[in-house]
Image (cartoon, rainbow, N blue to C red; front, side):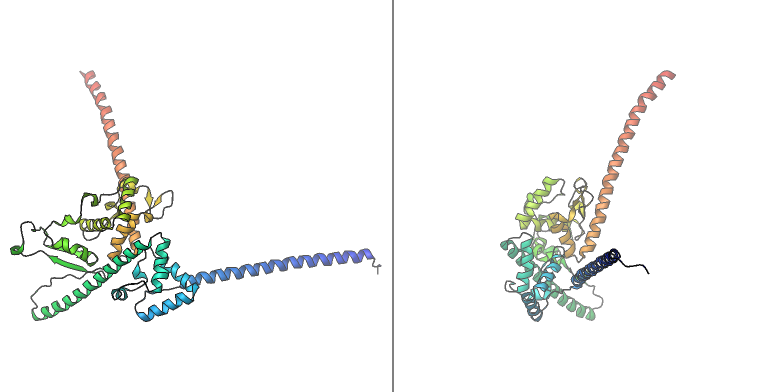
Length: 372
């Protein structure tokens, strides 16, 4: 057996130290991996919690007290609720309260969900206090009017059902809308004996949505033609053709509420009951620079004020979900751009045909001269 020297011991100790360092390095890698997995799991659990968050509009005072206490005592819940409502495109009071609840309310100023959620988010959008109050009063008036009309129609239908049971040969004079969101009111012309020369109308029956019934009732029953709901020529809307037109329309929408109301009525009447399309708002030349999301070097159509306050507003009031509205808008964009491409193609083809025709005429003339 060879003698073990100090040099051998030093080599052995060095190997052990090197091995320990290697083990320690691997152990640190394992610890780092475990910590990373823990962080990822916590992040995923937070995302799952956010996705699972649900909120249903407040329908009575008990629900109001419950939600108010949660908002006051739970900052995490309040933050999640704000994010939930904020994620709804163009959210309204009806995303926080049910229409039946709002119908019985005179003011929302003392309600915590109204102040902490609705008003807070509207301030973030840049709205002033006065504008928010005016907008809320308008929304409440519209909702209450819609609920009252719906109640009146239900009573009217009950009476008519009783009448039909007594007189089965009589035909019904009302039509129920397929939409649960908008019901239709039938407005008939006055009898000929009661009409004046100025009030004679060509239309026998006009159907308008309850949403606009309060605003249009006077104009439809007045002695003026149907198109006289516009106050003056400045309120008459024509499709936006360039950025200058867009700026003018946006300025009027922000500063003159009556303009927005009259434009909605104008387009509603002009598009067969609210079947409004993008080419009613924008020309082909203008829309060429836009798409829905604003990608691929294009501008976002969603950010245009006329799109959100007119196109989207009218279709939402007809009961169409926002997702379906955007699908319709995307298809209409494609159709408009296809029409623009087809026009350019036809124009080039026509010019080319004229050029070839003009070029061919001298050649034919020369051939005739040579033959003579």
